[in-house]
Image (cartoon, rainbow, N blue to C red):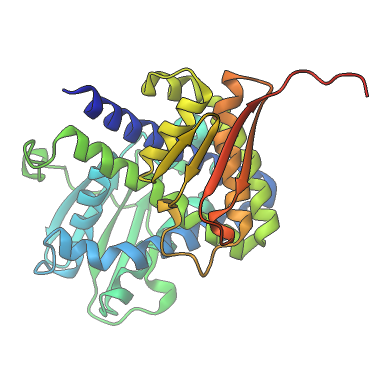
Length: 347
């Protein structure tokens, strides 16, 4: 493998992992700082936004339009999550009933975070996405029955899509029945990826996109639910802590140990266009929020800065990351400057 390809793959891996941990941290911070009810509203809004953006195009892209509604939905969750690095299986019991199981470890509630997620927040994910598939498919008989959640101590988030005989009311599109369990999984029947069609670089890029999409969509939802300024505070504080916590891992994956080099590699791995002069980095695109210009407020980037700061502060505790120009405020680029400051002198 060439060194340039190594750099591309390590960049995808570093950004994918960092945004993944950022998402988990944001959900935990929302629970702690705003309470279960508001955190659940944000998670429901996040997954509804993800679904409305990705679900129908994804069905077509994955070649599932000719499947029955229940089977197509279950297979979609298996294939799309599998590409993102999430452990999911599906079991088609019949044309009108198909199971999915998100097995531990749960990707979204990474690591020990699983012990701090209220059941209402996990259920909000299902209300945001799974309960709404029938609506987007124009099939009012399609619903989802959840038969278990990892956050409740059961071995995975499990349930099935089912097409009923009668139309379902909005409140019945998602139901909970913890007395049922799925049939055995026939792993030999699960689709597998073609190694030639899906080489490592493409898989890492998909995983990066998967993590970036969650951050792309949770930020505007937080802004709407909490207000831009409150959202900015949580984004910044959480990002700074997550960045510091995973700085050494990020440096290891990238194989870099200079702050300006690490920042350049992370911004480039997002897919952005950069120029570098000395301690300045010019970022002339913002792929993360491309297409959301009419929604964006300055507080989005003000919050995101915390993530990059956190990564760099572990490398140099007195470092300052300055944003001198703002693409999101009509200027030609984001102009980043990394400076090292000494301890304060006498005033």
